[in-house]
Every structure is written in C-alpha cells, then in structure tokens.
Length: 166
Image 1 (cartoon, rainbow, N blue to C red):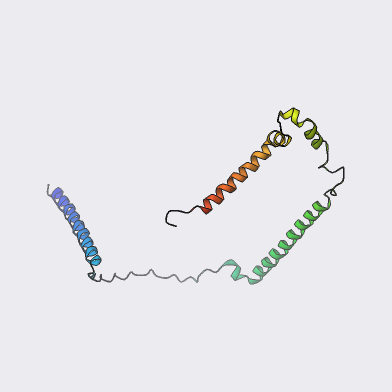
Image 2: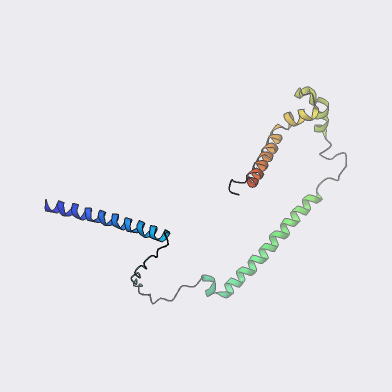
C-alpha cells in the first residue's frame, strides 16, 4: 500500500508543479503584456562535446584527383557540343525534306480535302461544312484543343485571383 501511495503522491506532486509552472508562465506572460519586466532565465548548463576522431576529414572524390575532374569537364563540354550539332543536323534535314509550298502533289492538297468538301455535309448530317468537319471528322483533335484551352484559362484565373487580404 505504501508503494501505491508514494506513486500517487509523486504523480500528484508533479501535476501540481506543472500547474504552478503553467500559472507562473501565464502570470509572467500577463506581466509582460502589461509592461512588466521578465526576470532573466538562468544560463543553460554547458554540454560536453564528444571527443573528435583522429581521422582526417574526408575530401570530395574529385578534389583528390584534379586531372580526372578536368577530363570529365572537357568530356562533358565535347559531348554537349556533339549532341547540339547532331540535333541541329537532324532538324535541318527534316526542313530540307519538306515539300515545296504550293506544289499540287503536296500532302495538303490530296483527296482528303476533296472528300471533306464533296461528301462532308452528307456524311456528317451537319448544316455547316466547317462545324461538321470540326465536330465529326476532327472530334478527338477538337476535344484535345478544347481541353488545353480550358486548362490555360483555368490557370490564368488561378494566377490572377486575389484573396480577401490582398
């Protein structure tokens, strides 16, 4: 029984101490708000630093071998130039392979355009040829474009929206 009483007494004392500490902290805060001075707290006890090892500090791997680092930098620059030149070459070849503007055998002037114009109104059932082409033949493309437009407008509205405090 005495062990239980001691436990409860210790527990009760620690709770009372916490309450008095809280009260005193609250009272100190109230005093501070009312313009009173706060007593200085005692300086914290110094903490012992752990013993330092005798090993020298580790260096970055590239600092140990400056020639190796220099070779890697040179290789990086050479590879960057080669990749850029090859990409420019591929793009120039692609542009050179494009058909000349206005030639009758261009892909822009083929049977698809004629089909759209001749049978577009019959096949789509639309009154307007442009609306029939956009909403029937090119429906997925139009859906993708409208999704991109919606996301762009939503983003702009979110960026321009102001909150109550601003």
